[in-house]
Length: 511
Image (cartoon, rainbow, N blue to C red; front, side, top):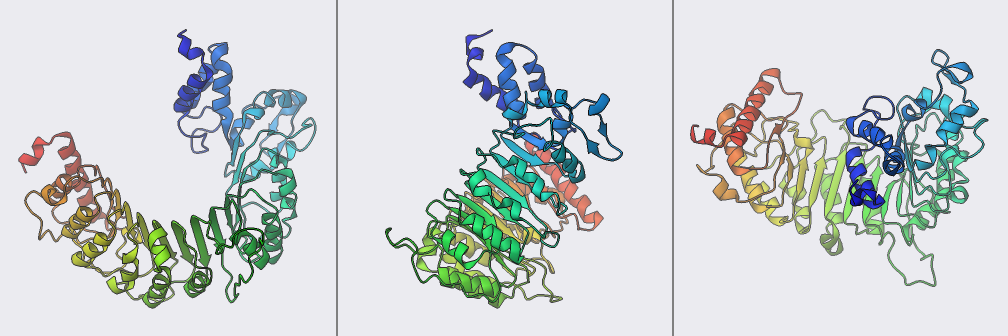
C-alpha cells in the first residue's frame, strides 16, 4: 500500500469524495443505497486501515430510519413486525448499533413517519441504556408529524448538538414543552429553526423563552415571537441569519438598548441574512420602516397578493442610502392574488431598486405579470453590473406574450457579464435587432442556466443558433411544463439543435 494511503487525512478526503452526496432517502432504501456508499461499504471490509475511515464517512450523515433498520435482526424476538409496525430491540441489536451510532453527526428524518415513530419508541426503552446518538451535531425534521410524535425527538437532544431544525403543523400541536430544556441539554446550539406554528400562542411563548436562553445563536428561523424575544434577537451579539414572521396589527417598538455597558447600535444591525414574512405586505413595509435593517441578503414573503402600489411603497422604504450599499440579494414573493387579473408591474414600480449597485441576485415572484420592454430591461441591467441571478416569476409571463425579446436578453447579458442564471418570459418569435454574429454584441459571459417558461418558439433552429453563439455555456433551455404539448415539441427541437451545435460546431456553418 502506498504510504499516502496510510494517512487518515488523505483517506478521509478520498472517501468523502466517493460518498458524494449525503445518504439520501431517495436512493435505494438502506445503507449503501448508491454506488458511492456501496463502494465505501466494500472498502470498510477491505483492510484495517480503511475500516474506520470508511465507516465514519458512511455513517456521518444518516437518513432515518432505513440505515438503522438494516442493522436490526430479522428473526427471534428481534423481528420487525411490519403488519402492526411494532419494533422490539434485543440486546444483540443494541450491541450491533453501538458500533455505528457514535459515528452519526447528522440525522435527517425519512418521510415514512409512522415507521419512525415505532423505532423512536424502541430507542427509548431497554436494552438502550444511553443516548442513542451521543455525538449528534445536526438534527433535521421537515415533515408533518402527529402531535404525540414530536416529544420523541428529545432523545436526540445531546450536548454536542449545534443545529436543530423542526417543521411543525400548528393546527395539530397542543403541547410543545418538550423543547423547553433545550438550552440546558444543548448548550452549544448555534442554529435553531422551528417553524410552521404560525401564531399559536402556547408554542410562541415556549419558543420565545427558548430563544432568549440561547447565547450562541448564529442562525434563527421561527414564526412569531414575543416582543421580549424579538428585542433579544434584535441585539443578539452572534446572530447573523434570521427568518421571522411579523404579526398583523402589532406595533413593534425598540425604545431602549438592552446592553447599557456596550456601544449603542441599531436593532438587527448584525443580521446579514434577513427573512421577513407576514400576511400583508403593508405590515412588512411598516416593520422595515421602524427597524431599518441593512442586511446583505433580504427575503420578503407575503401570504396575500400585492399591488404595484404596495410594492412601490416597499421598494421606496428599502432604497435608503445605507441599504443601497448593503443589499446584494433581494427576494420578494407573494402567494396567489384574490384578484382575477392583478395589475401588471412596470419599470416605474421597480425603479427604486435601480439604486442597488451591488445587487447580485434578484428574485421577484409575484402573482402579477411584468410589463417590461427590451429598453427597460437594459436600463435595469445597467444599474446592476454585478448581477448574477435574475428571476422574474420563475419566467412565467402570467399574461399575453412578453414585450421582452431575445434581443433584450442579449443586451441584459451584455450589461451583466457575471450573469449565470436568468428566469424570464420572453417573446422568442421576435428576432429583430440581432446581428448575424450575436456573440460580438455579448462578448464572454457566464450564463449557463436559462429558463424561459410561457415562451413559444416558431423557428427552433434559428433560435438555437443565436443562443449557441451568444451564450456558449447554455447547454439546454428549460421551459414550463404547462405549455401546450405542441409547443413543448418545438422546445425539444431547440435543445436538439443546441446539443448538435455544442458537439459539432461545424453544424453552425451548415445552417
